Length: 236
Image 1 (cartoon, rainbow, N blue to C red):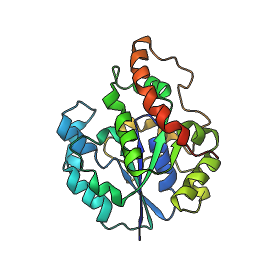
Image 2 (cartoon, one colour):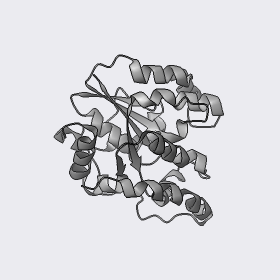
Image 3 (cartoon, rainbow, N blue to C red):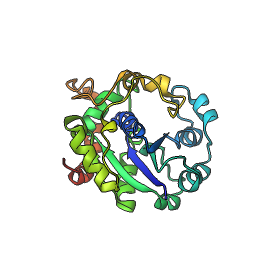
Image 4 (spheres, rainbow, N blue to C red):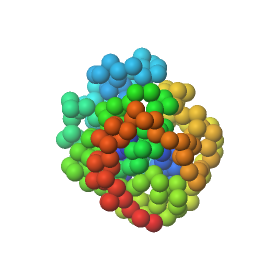
């Protein structure tokens, strides 16, 4: 039986580095944001390269979830990198019960500082925090905090692997720089930092940058969601 891990994260949450980490295991294949085209097609939101993204994947979420839950997988483990904001009210929830769920959270102040550099006026919907909490409450699964991954990659990833029923693999701690075959076509717009990386940095770029004043009201809306999930984070 293939272990199909659905890792649910918001944007700017260390999610691509985590995909690199799992994808560097010999027993694991990775899938990059498989619901992205469905999200863009349904919302019409203006993202970099949106037309190319929609052309690269099925825009039908039911078809995507069928493939993710029962489709053939060439490895013992499949790591699915999911963005929580791609889960729309119309996205079927029932098929997700077949997956093993995990959740990557990050202090929303740091998320907003990073995301505002890409989209100057982010919204709560852009960050997917309500969906992340909904999915956790419905399916459960281990939670890891991006700050803990950066502070102690070995310990945090070891705890995550144990919770998922996997043996920890040292290959998860470093990887060759550059792109990967599993990267989505959007990588050229978003993945410059991770393509230059060879492992988890001690802290993410821009850690000390202040949050723009205009985003303080949005931070107040984000914090309750993070504060509901953060106490469940695995500790090394």
